[in-house]
Image (cartoon, rainbow, N blue to C red; front, side):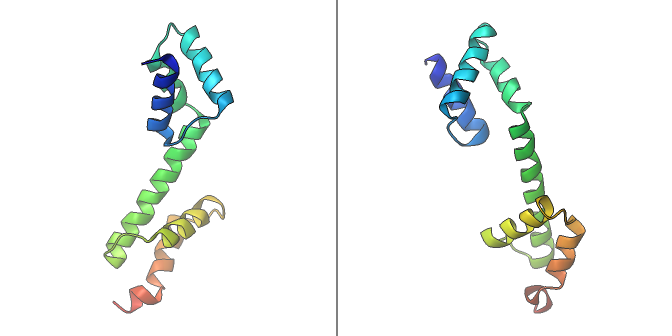
Length: 111
């Protein structure tokens, strides 16, 4: 497997997307400077701000999903998950606010 292929595969595995050309060049440079260490590149990516943001978003999605399962006995639909995630990330709402919103919903009240 070529160096580029290894890096593309690693990036896809971590971020579920293909890196742009500049990122590919940057990662190849890092790879070569670190004695062709794919482990170094992986650590570099996992310590990046992009990965940290992704980890935070995933944690938020898990917390929202847990509330849906506990309170509504179902997984969240795409729209609900997206709405509440946006409220937590962009509007600085709390997970308690999400819980109260679900409890005050028509769906919860009709159970």
